[in-house]
Length: 206
Image (cartoon, rainbow, N blue to C red; front, side):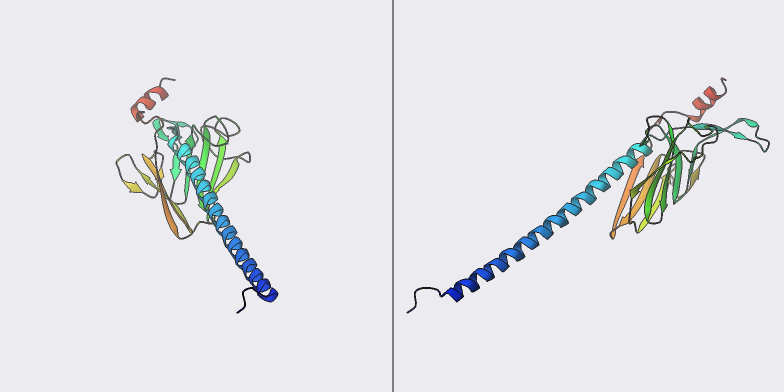
């Protein structure tokens, strides 16, 4: 009875063992890459959410007066600067991403992306009629979105998809990415105790 392996059997065994180790290492490496990508995606989502939350939470109660057709101020008429619908939201924040001063910000759902625009309020623009110039900075917060939309909670607790000339109590951002749905609900906190009456009183002191 044979008690040892032949050379051919040894070589076959080594080849099979090498193949098994190669397959195992390849599978392990593929799993590490998948985990790494998942972690990066989660980190990027967390960063984007933190950025959004900081900017929106710090939304400024920025009061403006209305003008007539000949650009004269209409006495005792004013409003909060806020212009938003389901795909775009424009407002003033005291905590922007690129600067440390009050800035005009616009968030836009466009071309499967969530875009961010920013420009300092008192730099190159007319702060009485805020609008972007060529100096604005642009950042893509999220990419490859299947869906993206905004909705707003008003002062009287209604949920709406458009709001103008008054600030919301909260902003809801609805995102769908990689067949998963995400909802970001962000409360507006800056100057939360400020009333229209108090701002109006300050406006007409000058």
